Image 1 (cartoon, rainbow, N blue to C red):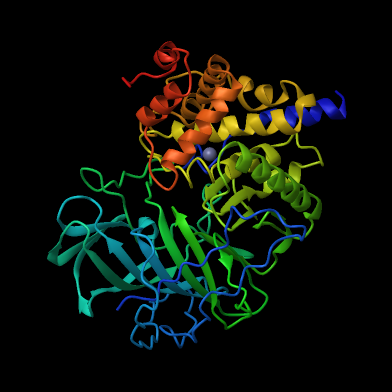
Image 2: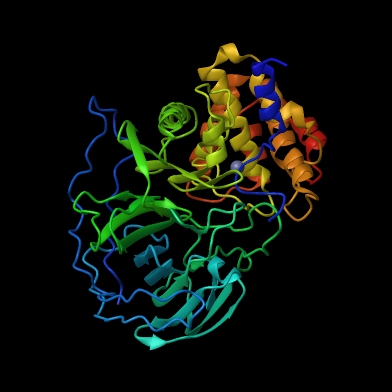
Length: 521
Ligand SMILES: [Zn+2]
């Protein structure tokens, strides 16, 4: 057996998938929306410095002292918070999106996080609300402690069960009325398992879905049950200001948002990040990160990797620049100010807004060719910036909407950048697995991980390819732009998807829908 052949045997033997769905698993704060314009024209410099128009960082306001916690097998002491009144808004809210402001104090070596969170919420449900429902993913594991929830300085009653936090409002909240919740919570960050980014290992702490957030409302609150595979959360597009301070030295933060230039980022100082119109804010802290940086126009692209992975880190940076450059032209402008691709010990990749995780094993395999898991799955996660981040959808009930689109975006990437690869991508990522099954499979109906991926991801890619050839590439690409434009920062359903497709072609696509989908659309 040649070395070349053995190499491909190894590649094929790896379960190919994405997005952390694994077989085994499973007093308002100031609102200042200052974000680099992702639509800015390209500049000849590596990247355009962010104008220093943001409000200067305040000195630490909410959490002024911090006592490292003892090992997690002893009771948690109370944090020594020093509360000062939240300052009044200096700039009126510029959108009715929910505004999250966080001050998060990370004890890196102690694996603890203390957070003050304020949520400015505008009731856009169209109905009067007597309660708010928030998702609290950390409470699905141990280590989440909610200290209080305040409204106008008064403690609110709430029920916290599993991932669901129901906050009872003292007065009904009318349509279009606004309120600001303030809450304080602590996390004893759990040790990380390979099937999910959340948690810590000795050299990295990943904070994903780490704070309570208000779930979308559409004829009821949308908070689906967790499941052993797939993703179950649905998010409204929201605005974030996240202030992070770490203890210790030499800790680098990779985050969904771009740090403000005034931030020093040194130990003991607050660093402020902003992210607008995003689903969720994630970050990763490590004391062994190296980083390579480039840009696409004004969008800062960073590749965070560990020692010994310089080649793969550079390879992933190059692929990321190409992918963002391609997808911004084909789909829509890149939605955020930055993209960070972050190495982590995972089975797979996992997308968040402005930040994606990629498994170390992909970096291990990488030999310099883009015919690799690292690049194909990396591009997949980057495509989720459009099909998940920009265009939201219900990941539990209609997972194909973001997953099949992300898979097919891989194909588009290889078609445009490596036409000489021929059918390599199709054979490597799709055909090898013999995909079948209804594309509109929910995460709960998927059966095994393999049958779920074969249906929602891979047969979804087959459907999209047939749709593309039926429509013709020009109409298909116009459709993708139209779809991204209409549903950007919002939510799309399968019916929305088919309607926009049909409006962009004179061809009848109903037989394709009937062949691949079990539902009526
Ligand atoms: Zn995915």
